[in-house]
Image (cartoon, rainbow, N blue to C red; front, side, top):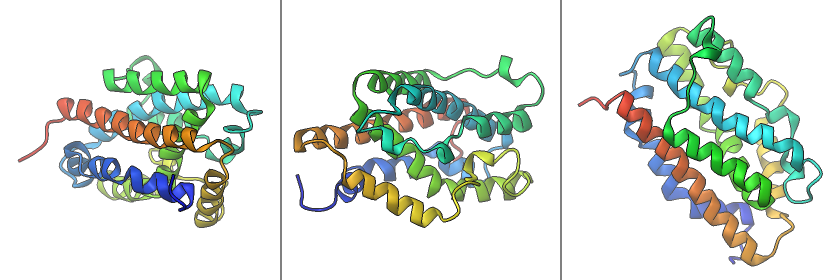
Length: 217
């Protein structure tokens, strides 16, 4: 493994997958204002199933020496996603939300590693939550502007971490925990590959969404 901090190794190894996600046609058109709020709602709906998998699995890992240190309550997103969907979809939304096939595969993988491989769960935790604290803020601002959603209010609460006073400091502390991950070099290589897989699973969700909302010319 590299002598670089483990967090830097993960970031470098998954950069191509991260770029692929940023350039996904669905996200380009969504953030470019070429879709309506229905596309944003459908995307938010898929996030609910992924974060339920992450957070329902977390209870069994709280005392785990590898995954436990990452399970910070201020990161939890399910309640915020539920408030957002209530705003975006209206009354009775719980009876109407459904996961796309790629979302089902993504959530299933999260549950699988949570049950059998704590370090693999960390890979998924990292790719989701640190992304929310970083690039997710761009999505929030665009959604507020395009669809008149209240600033940091219902509809975009998923992206608002009210209990994290200093996101930059929080991310530094998170990366320090990654750097200190108590596993060997072979296990770290597996974690890097799982991070790449997590991005691929996420990108597959964008592909499925793209079939519902075809890219514009």
